[in-house]
Each structure stands twice: as C-alpha cells, then as structure tokens.
Length: 116
Image 1 (cartoon, rainbow, N blue to C red):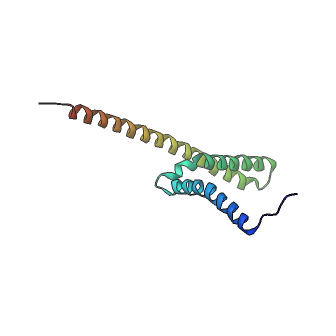
Image 2 (cartoon, helix red, strand yellow):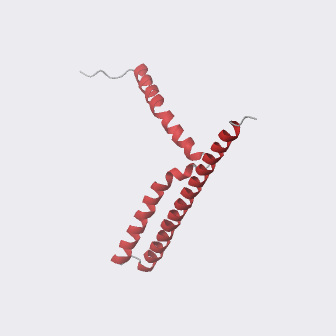
Image 3 (tube, rainbow, N blue to C red):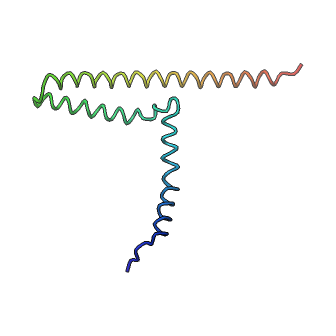
C-alpha cells in the first residue's frame, strides 16, 4: 500500500522542489532582465510572429475578415523582417566588439612584453 505523505514529508517535498526548480527559474529571469537579455527571447518571438503570419494569411485566404487579415499579414511580415534586420545588425556588432577586444588584448601583451 502507498502511504499518504504526512505534513512534514509534504514540506520536505516542497522544499526539494523549490531548491531544484527555483535557482534555474531565477537565473533565467535574471538573465532576461539584464540589459541585452531580451535577445535570448528572439527565437520564441520569431516563432510566435511566424505563427501569427501563417494564421492571418490562412484566414485571409479562407475569407474571414479578409481586409483585416491582409493588413495583419502585412504587419506581421514587417515584424519578421525587422527582427531579421535587428539580429543581423546585433551579430555584426558582437563580432566587431569581439574583434576589437582581441586586438586590444594582443596590443597589451605586445606592449607589456617590451624591455628597454
């Protein structure tokens, strides 16, 4: 037979769940709330807007509020394009910054290695 959990056991289970789940949830939330953390949500946002685009196009083809769905399709396509543009510019910026940091690191090593 399965024994029901007593109050103390329930507290232990809740404590264990809190211990194992809470740090990951907190760290993910903390990462998103940091400056620049929203970039981690871009794949999710891209998926949601893509689904919006597909649904509005299908609704326009079927004939449900056709003009409204065409306008919403146009707007969601614009959002997808702007996200793509943002991601490309962000990756260019990251690459330029990492290249700049690497070149600064080489300059400090070479200048610190000089002896007179």
